Image (cartoon, rainbow, N blue to C red; front, top):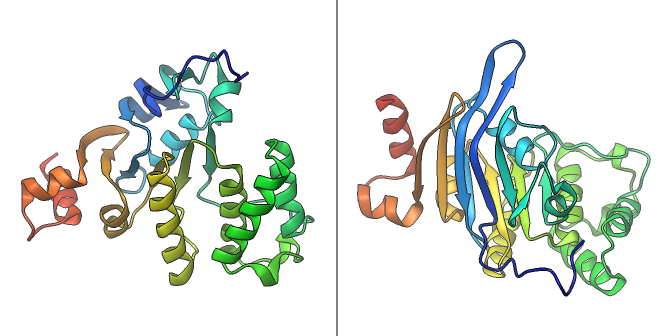
Length: 254
């Protein structure tokens, strides 16, 4: 339980893993001794080819799957031993949007707010803000089961942002969004990071990672191949190259 007597978490990494490994029966090593250290207020991208282990990694970080080996710390809390405290600081958006189809959009948002004990005044303010920004005012009375994938994605994003967690973990968050929705989300990601929220995304769109992220990690076959800040990468490769060039060359070199 958080409270006045809780030690300060201001200086701990937002996300840290040690030798994190996940094996699927009988011998598929999806994540292999992965070490990550992501500081607070950073936008970090996890990039890699299909089957690299990105989604498995994010599910491990969110506490939806247990590792076979290794450890995970969220805001200094051990996900395996202090899962309640760790999960209270983290919001997760899966790669496939799903929700209670018989709830209306507004009912869903209120349900999320009540579940995570968002104060009423904060809820009303954030609800208005994100419903307007994602252009969903005309959808708040529609059932979730009636929504397109893109509108459902916007609804889930609203629910996630209304919580205002310290860490956002999002699996392919731009997938299914139209260009306008994608533009809004990218702006919001940068804004919340400037206010101290940590954002970890997985993406296949390397230009997006380069545009909005401070740093990135490339994984392949469950192994961390490289980890760089975008600024250091630009200094290293020069202005004529980009993350896509670096990514291809790194994987080919491996």
